[in-house]
Length: 530
Image: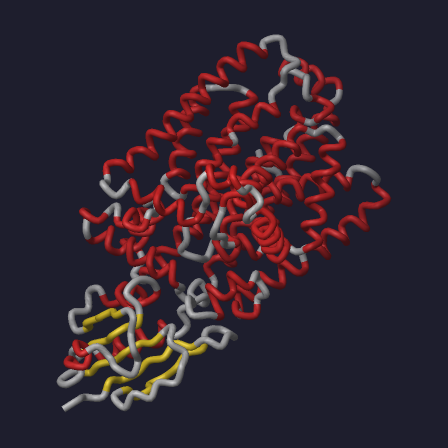
C-alpha cells in the first residue's frame, strides 16, 4: 500500500499539474505554427483523404491525428489541439517519476550494483534499513524530479501549446524508462513496448530517432560482474534489434503516403548533411552551442544549471554509471544539434531536458546525504534556485509577454508578428457580423497565422468567405476582394505590414499590439468602390 504522504503528494501533484496547465489555456494567443497544425488537424478530421496532410510540409502526422481526435470532442479547435500537449505533459510527469524510481532504486545503488536478487532478499533480512534507505533515496529523487517538471517554465509553456514537442518528450521519457528496464532484465514484452514507444516518437518528430541511436549507450548500466552476463548481453542484443525493427516498421508505415519523401527534404532545411559537417564541423558549432546553453539557462535559471553541472561532476567522480548515462542522454543530442543544425529554436532542447532534471534531482538528494549539518543550507540553496523559474512560470500563467523567457520564443509566441494577439477579437467581430449576412475577409498571408487562424473558426459558417493573398500591396488591394466590397461587408487583415496605410479604400477598425512588442495586427474595413 502507498503511504499517506505519497498519496498526498500525488493528489497535490495531479491537482497542481492540471491547474497550471488548464488555467488560462487560451491566454497565450494562437501563433503561426499552432494555426497551421490546428488547421491540419481540422482538415484531417473532416476529410479522410487528407489524414497525411502534415506530410505536405514534411511533418510527421501523429500529433495531428491526436489533435483531430481531441477536436472531435472539444468545440474550440485550438483548445482541442492544445489538450494533446496537456495530456502528453501529464504522461511526462508520471514518466519522469517512474524513470527516477527505476534508475535510482535501492538495488541499483553504487554500493549494491553487484548484488543479485537472492542476495538482496538476504540483505533485506539482515540490513532492512539499508534497503529502506535506498528505496527512500529513489523516492525522494522521483518526487523532486516530478516537482521540477511541474514548476519549470520550459515544460509549463510547451505543455500549453499545440506543438509536437511535449508529445515527443513524453515518448522519450518512456523510451528511456523501457530501455533502462531492458538493460537490467532483457524481456520480450519490454522490447515490444519500447519498439512501439520509439516508433510513436518517430512518427511525431524526426528528433525521435535519437532514442534509437541512444539504445547502445544503455550498456553503461549493464552489470558485467554477473556470471550469466554473456547470455544476458546476447538476449539484450536480440531484443534491441527487435525494438529497432518495430520502431522502423512504424515509421516506414508513413510510406503509404506518396508525400513521405518530403520529410527528408524538410529535415535538410533544418540540418546540414553529414558530408558538409565533415568538411567544416565548426561552421555552426560554437554559435549553436552558445544559443542552446543560453536558452536552457534562461528557462531553468542559472542556479539550477549550476546544480546540474555540480551533480554531473559529483556523479562522475563517484563513478556512478547512472549519472554518466544521463549525461550522455543530454550531451549526444546537444552536440548533434550544435554540429548539424542550420535552424534552431529553444523547443529543440525540450526532449532531452528530462535527463538534466533527473541529474539535478539526484544531485540535490545526494548532497543532502553527504553531511547532515549542511542540509539546511542546501535546502535554502535549492529553494532559492527555483525562485526565478517559478516567477517566470507565474507570469506565463498570468501575463505571458513579460515572462522573460528566451527572446526567440517570446517574439514567436507573444511579442512579434507570429503571435496571434487580436485573432480572438477579429473572430468575434466577423462572427457577429456574419449572423445575418455574408461577410468577406481578405488576409495578408496564404500559409500560417493567416488565413488558418480564421479558417479553423469559420469552417462551418457559410456566411464567411476568406481569401488569402501574398504578397499584398496595402495601397493597391487585389481586385477580387475590392469587387466583393461593392455589395458586401468586407474586411482586410494586415499582420506583417507595420507601415502606415494611406489607402482611401481602407478604414481602420482596430489594431492589436503583439504583447509588449512594436508589432501590430490591423483590421480594416474596405470601403465600397462605385
